[in-house]
Image (cartoon, rainbow, N blue to C red; front, side):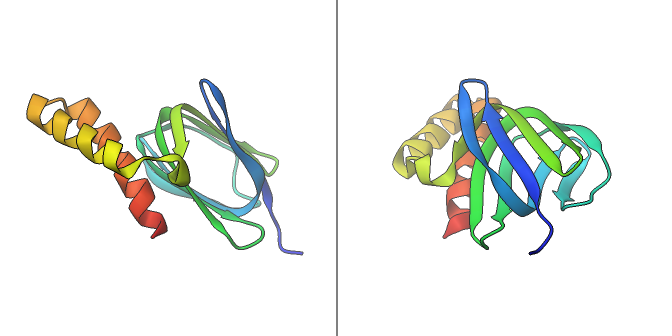
Length: 125
C-alpha cells in the first residue's frame, strides 16, 4: 500500500471532505504548496483558490476554498476554511452570474470568490 495522509477539509459550517490521500495541493500566502505523506510539519494561511486532493483510490477531488488555515503533522492534514465547496456542489450558472455582477460592481473580493468557484469546476473537466 502506498503511503497516505489523512485529510480533513472543514468549512465554518460543515465538514466538506474527509479521507485518505496521497497528495494535496493548496494555495497559501507563501504560494502553492503540495503536501504528501512524510511532509515536514507546517502551519499556513490559505488564500482563495482551488484545493486539489488526490485520493488513495486515484480519484481527484477539487474544492473551491476561500481563506482559512492549513495544518500538517504526523500525516494528518487539516484544511480549516472560512468557506469551502466541492466542485460538484457548485452551480456554474449561478457562479457565472455572480462573477458578472461582481465585475459590474467593481467588487474585487466577490469577483475573486466567483472566479475561484469557476476554476474549481473547470479543473475537473
